[in-house]
Image (cartoon, rainbow, N blue to C red; front, side):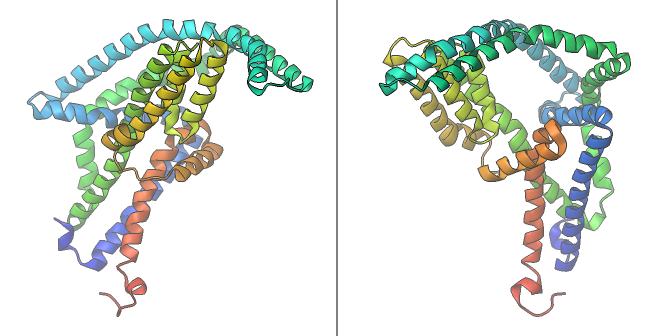
Amino acid sequence: MSEGALSETEARRVDFAWSLGMVGSLALVFALLSVFGGVSVPVLLALGTAYVLNPIVTALERRGLNRTLGTSVVFTGCVLLLVGAVLYLIPVFREEAAKLPDFFLRSSERVVPQVEALLGRPLPDLLRQRMAELGGRASELLQSAGPTAARLVASFAGNTARFVATLLGLMVVPVLAFFFVQDYPHLVGLVKGLVPRRAVGLVSRRFSEVDDVLSAFVRGQVTVGAILSVLYSTGLGFARIDMAIVIGVIAGFGNMVPYLGTTLGVVLALLGLMLSWQGAWQLAVVAGTFLVAQMAEGLVITPKVVGDKVGLSSVSVIIAILAFGELFGFTGILLAVPTTAILKVVLSVVVERYQRTALYTGEGRGP
């Protein structure tokens, strides 16, 4: 039954009830994360995975493939893709990570002369000394990072209960995700079956708006980050910049936080440029890489992939990440933008209904 079957007063009540339900659900999610993080995180990861993969399985189902078989095909493809990516990326990142100590050590030794040559005057002795100490300490820290990480893993593994719980939590995510994807239509139907029959049309439309926002963010931002990472890594690699892949991935996926990825990428690329200077052509290639990537992201990639469905300003995203990160830690950072996008839909619904009331229009009392 459509919204048209409801009176304005009934539709207002349904929308307000739906808005309260969404806010309450979000509050419950964060409460569970705070109290039962070890249990709730794998379930949320599995639900997120199911949400992302469901459209693919649904498309296969529409082509006549059994849903269970379609789910198996999609998960098999994801596993093969993940294994291939890991087998390819681990050696690459290991090689790049091995360069980090020498990278920072050379930074402290070469950057200062390069800056002095550009300025045409020597830097203060105190600044030269501090930069040298910073580079040396960074190099020592990175050299000891491997043994330190090994000790942390050994210490963590020593706590058998915690280690087993974490291992089981990671192992159960794909299992739960498989069953969530397989039963996705049933779960949606179960929730839909609890909605009063007269309000089904309106509530379904509201959830469709939330789905548009979440799908635009989750699928869109990951896709944009991957495309930008390839563009940055290719351009910086062509410029023969040290750690081009690492810098490209940081700049690409860092784009999820407005300005952060580009700023870090530019700083790291300029630092790498100073350490591997071969001529002005490198500077031109680096500048061209960031210029082309930013223009492509703003004019083509984001409009085509994400569109305007999320509709959050850069300031809103930054404030949300800072606030949720402060309140809920790393998990809060991961959920900050999706949660804010959902709350934006809720707020738009409340405002829409408020603007139809007699209090807002100044007309006679409504029905």
